[in-house]
Length: 310
Image (cartoon, rainbow, N blue to C red; front, side, top):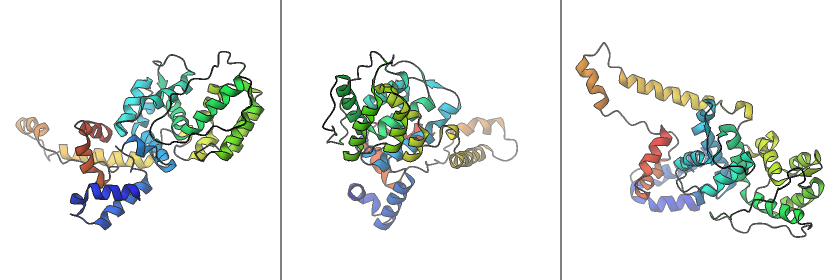
C-alpha cells in the first residue's frame, strides 16, 4: 500500500487522465501477477518474500531461452541479464550465487542457466538466512558451539560482504547433526525467510559432516525446497512455459502480419518497408503506472526496457 500510494503521488498528473480507481486496479493486478517488480530499484525488489519470488520467476521466464539453447555464461554475463530487469542489482549477490555453483573457484568460469538459476534462487531468496549460516559455520569450525543465533537486523539493500568460510579441507567440514541443531534454532528465531526445517534435517541427516559450500549446493539442488519456495518449476520443466510461448507466438504472428502487404510488392515498396514506423507492441508485463517513471529515472532506461521486451 505504501508503494502504491507513493506511485500514485509521483505520477498523479498522468493518473488523473484515467482515474485513481483504474490505477489501483492495474497496480494490484501487477502485484498479483508478479510483474510489479520490473525495472524497479533493488531495495523494492528484495523488500518482501513475494517480491523476491516474483523477481525469480520473471528472470526465469525472460531468459529461459538461454538454457534452452544450451548457452553457457559467466557470472558477469548473468549479472547483465539481471540488470536488464533491475538496473541497480548488486554484483555481490550474483558473485555469491556463482560461488555456490563454482565452489569458490575462478569466477570467470562458464555456468549453465539451470545451475546458476537454482543457486541464485537460494542466494537471493534466503540471503539473510545464509549470512547467519556462514557465521554459525565459522564458529563451529573454530570449535565453538554457538549459543546465540546471529540474525541480520536490516533488510535494506546493503548486503554485507560475506567472508567465504574456510573449507580448506572439503572432506572435513563440520558435524552435520550439530550443524542442524544450530540451524533449527536459527529458523525458529529468525524473522526472515528460511528453508523448511524438515527438509534441512532430511538433507543433513544423510551425511556425517558437511562443508559450507556443500550445504549451499545441496539447498540449490533440493527440489523439495524449490517446490516449497514456489517461484520456479522443477528442473525437468525448467524450459517449459506454455503461457509465455503462446504470448510469443501471438507477437510473432502480429509482427509477421505487419511485414505482409498483400500480393507481391514492387521492389520499391519492399525497400521502403524497413523505414516505416511499425506500431509499438508493449510488453504485457510493464504496468501502466511505471511508464512515466522509467522515462524520467535514467537516460539509459529505454535501452534496458527494449532489451527485456525483445
